[in-house]
Amino acid sequence: MEFLQDPFPWYIAGPLIAINLFLLFYMGERFGLSRSFRTACSIAGAGKKFPFFNYEWKKEIWLMIYLLGSAIGGFIAFQFLNAGAPVIVSAKTTIALQQLNITPNQSFEPQEIFSYVHLFTPKNFILLLSGGILIGFGTRWAGGCTSGHAISGLSDLQLSSLIAVIGFFTGGLIMTHLFIPLIFK
Amino acid sequence: MRRNSIFLLLGVFFGIVLTKAQVISWFRIYEMFRFESFHMYGIIGSAVLLGIIIVQLIKRKKLKTIDGDIIQISPKANTYKASIFGGTIFGLGWALVGACPGPIYILLGAGYAALIIVWIGALLGTFLYGVIKEKLPH
Image 1: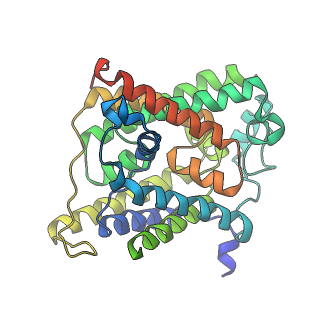
Image 2: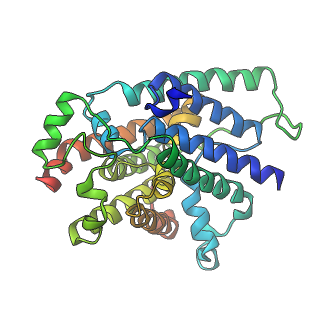
């Protein structure tokens, strides 16, 4: 069980995600996690005024249970499997992060963005909230996220998923190379 | 009840895998979009490659679900404008907070309370989409 204490290499993680994809198909469902936001809006009652949220969300309860499990998985990995150890990035990324005043190779997540101390500074609060809005709006418009389009959709050779993944990278590259330097410097 | 327990366990498995592979770390996403590590590409690439084989097997062998029905994989809607516009907007958010939808939940479980703000934002964004959907190109 020693290997469970080290980070999983890509050739372990990738195939395990594919097994997860298969097991969800086997259970008669489909891997796609951004739908949970729509489900949550519907549970909160958004379907009374807006038809988009008026659908059979009870059929997606399995997804909320699955995501509760995912959160428990994150807890287990951090508490018992040494997953919270610092993430060591490449030498080039280390230099780039230092230029942004983000401390690299000391923690799992950047303290400058995710620690409690910075949580309610106006800049960071806006960063986290607007990031969330972009994720929620974008995934629903595109009809899927990394799991629904990049993993399930590409596995099923769907053209709209390939286009969506090209979009994911277009947005990601613009944010990383254009906006992040402006936000953090 | 049994069905829900299976989904819970599958979720635990998924959460552990993504956490242990550091896929849920902002650092790995930043590194990926700078093309300075193979890690994320290896994960997504090998998952999709195996996924293609799995989907072909499901379709050709007419594999069945746990309930005995033939597995149906309905195609994604051919909404190319929505894919590119929505996809780009999602990409902006993904790179900014370093988490896609699954990792938002996993990070909350790992103890990063900051993700509750991201989650509330995601609900607001989804709600906004639901309200103005008819006005957007698809």
